[in-house]
Image (cartoon, one colour):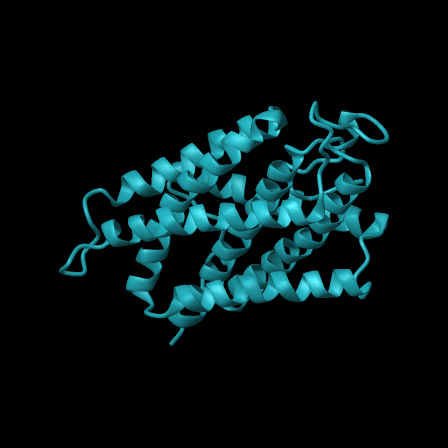
Length: 253
C-alpha cells in the first residue's frame, strides 16, 4: 500500500499488524464509520470557518486587524496537530476534530479574503472540490480508476515534486525572491495550477484505496478518525488549489 498523502503513508495500517487488529471492545474500522467521521470533521471545519469569515473582513470591506491571527494561527496550529496525529494515530479521536476546528479558522479567513477580492470565487471552489471528490469516488467504486502500483508510484512522485516546489517557494520568499511564472496568472502559471489540482485529485483515489485497505485489514476503531483526518488533509489541499487557480483566471479579466 502506498499513498501520496503524507499522513496516510505506506506503513500506517501495516504497522498495526497483519490480519484483524481489534480494540478492547472488539470493534474494528468500517467504511461507514470512516464516512461518518469525515462528515463530522467537515462540519467542525465549516463551523470555525464561518466564524473566521465573519471576523476576517471589516464592515468597510477592509481586512480586519485579527486577520493574520486566524490565518497564521490556523495554519501553524493545523500543521502541529497534523504532525501529532500522524505520529500518534491512537490520539486521532481527539486530535482529528481539533485539527478540523483549527484548520477551519485558516480556511475561513483565507476564503473571506479571496471572496473579497473576487466575489463568488469561494462557492465555485467549494463546488469544484466536492464535485471532484464525488466524481473520483464514483470512478473508484465503479472500477474506472484503479490504484495500481504504478499509478501510486506516479502520484507519490508528483506529490513529492510539488512539495519541493512549494518548499522552495517559501524559502525564496523569505529572501524576497520567487520562482518565476508558475505563481503568476500567465499560461504557465495556470498550467501549473491545473497540474497541481490533478495531482491533488488523484491523491483522493489513493486515500480511498488506503482507507479500504485499512477496513480489509481489520484496523482498530480509532483508525476511522485517522482515515477521515487523512482524507480531510487532501480535501483542504484541493480546495486551496482551486482557489488559487480561480484567482489566477479571474485576475486575467
